[in-house]
Image (cartoon, rainbow, N blue to C red; front, top):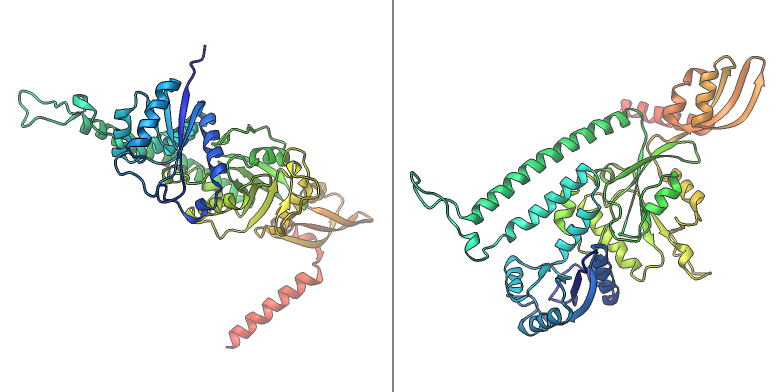
Length: 441
C-alpha cells in the first residue's frame, strides 16, 4: 500500500515578507495559492492543511515568527503530517531553525519545484540538469546538525585535526558538480553538432513557449501528429521535443515543445536547463501559448516574458496564441493581437500554421516561373513536394509552371527559370541602382 504523505502548506502574502518583482505582485493571491497547491499535488503530496500568514516583513530567524511556527507545530501534530511546504524560499539558517522545531521534513518552494523536475526527467540530459540544480541549491544549505557534521579525521602522521565532516561533504558535492558540468558540456557539444547538420539544410526552428500547464504539449501533438505526454500536472514536459512540421507554403520547419515557466522560477533552474532551452535561444520564431481560461492570463504573460528576457531572447519575433478557447463562454471577445486556438479540438489550427508561415523570415518564400523538360521527373517531383504549384501547362515535352516556395529550394533549379515575377525584378533593379550610386560616392 502506498504510504500517505500529508503536507501542511504555508502561503505567504506578496508583501515585504515575500519580495518578488512587479509581475509577481500582479498575480491574484487566491490564484497564487491554488497554483502552489497544484505544485504540491504534482509532487505527489496529499494536502492535510493550509496555513496562511500576512505580515509586514519576514522574521529573520524563522521567516514566519514564533507564534505562527507554534501554530504549524500544532497543525503537524493534529494532522500527522510528514511534510511541511513553504511557498517561499528559506535561507539556510531559517531552514535549520524551523527544522529544529518540527518533527518532519521541511521543504521550501524551490526544493518543491526541483523535486517535481526530478520526477519528470526521463533522458540522461534531463536527469543531469535536475541533479545540477539540486546540488547547487543544496551546497550553501549544508549545515551542522549536532556532532555528526563536526567529526574530524586525522590521526598518526597528520599535522592537524583534518577536515570536518561538513567540509568533506561540501568537497564531494563540488566534485560531483564539476563532473555533471563536464557531462552536460558533452551533451551541448553533441547538440551543436546535430544543429550544425540541420543548419546545413536551412530548416528554421519554431519554439512553443509559455506558462506551465498552458496546453503546449496538446497543441504540439495537434500540429505535428506526435504523441508526447500531455498532462494537467505541472512540468509534465521537461525534456525538449522536436518534430518536423510542414507549413501551408510547403516549407518545412522544426517545432520544439519546451518546459513550461512559472512565477518566481528558480534562477538555478534557468541556469541548469540552459542546454534544454537552447532550442528557444536558436529559434527564429517563438509561439507564446497562453491559457485563455486562466484568471491570471496577463500576469502569466508577464512571468513568461521575464524568463525570456533572462534568456536574452525577449526581442525575438513572437506570435501570441490563446489556447483552450473551447473553455471560454460562447461569444467571449478575443483581444487584438492574439490568435485563438484549441489544442484539444483543433480549432484554429490552419490559421495558426498560416500565421507561423507569414512570420518566418529565414529562407523566405519566392515566386518563380519554370520551364522544365518532362524527362526531369526528379525536379518536378521535388518542386511538387516542397512548393505550391500554379498555372501548370504542358507544351510538347516541356512543363511550364509557377512555383511559390522556399528560396533555398527554388534556387536549386534556377537553370530552368523562365522569368521571375515583376516584384523580384524590381527589387533586384533597386539593389543594383543603390550599388551603382554607392560606387559613385
